[in-house]
Length: 246
Image 1 (cartoon, helix red, strand yellow):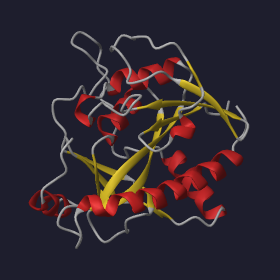
Image 2 (cartoon, rainbow, N blue to C red; image 1 turned 180 degrees about the horizontal axis):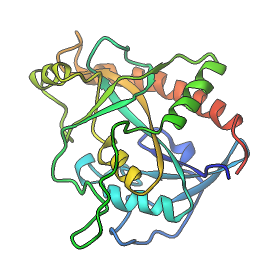
Image 3 (cartoon, helix red, strand yellow; image 1 turned 90 degrees about the vertical axis):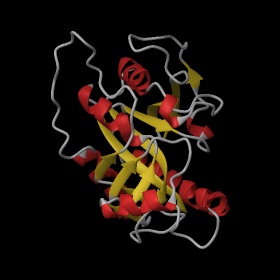
Image 4 (cartoon, rainbow, N blue to C red; image 1 turned 120 degrees about the vertical axis):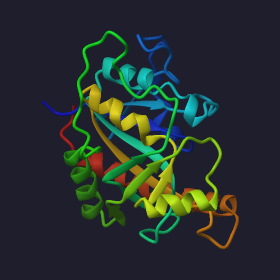
C-alpha cells in the first residue's frame, strides 16, 4: 500500500497550507498548532500542517509537536516530509541551497520529547538513523532526476530558540560535528519514530550561522530563503510526480 504523505511546513509555503481544513480539535496531547489541511498535488491527496500556527505565531520551543504528529497520523499520514529552515555551520553548503540531512544533534530542553507519559508502556526506539532511509533516498533520487542541486547528508543540530545562537555556541556546534543549525527537527523526528511514521527533513539553508558570515545574519536571509524555497518547491513537484497515486 502506498504511503500517505504529509508536509510539516513553516512560513513561506502557503501553497501547501491553502487546502480544505479539517475541524481543529484537540487530541490526547492537546491542541495542534493549526488545522490539518488537505490539498491535491500532482494527483496526490497531501496533508499539511503549519508547525508555527496560522498565522506564524508559535515559537519553536512552544510548539506542541506531539499533538501535531498525532493529528497527522489520525488523519491518515504514514510518511512525513518536514520543511526546516536552517543556518549553515560548516562549509558543507552555502546559503540559498537545500539538503537532506542524515543525522541529528539535540540541544533542546523542556520540550515534550516522547509520546510515553507516566504509566504508559515504554518503547525504547532505535534512533541510530533518525531520518527515514527510504524517504531520504526517494527525495534525493527525485532531485537527481530533475537535475536539482540537493546535498545528501550532513548533521542537523536542533537548538532551543527562539533566539539565534552566539558565535561561541556555533563554534561548539561545529566541534560537535554539526553542519546545519535549526530549531524544529527535534523532537519532531523522535516523536515520528515513536508513532511509527516515516520522517525526513528537507533543510532550506537560509543563512550562515553566527560568526560564519561577513554580513549580519538577517541581511542574508531574505534572498537566500527565496532561492532555497524555489529549489524545495521544484524538488517536491518532481517527488510527487514520480509517486504512485494514493
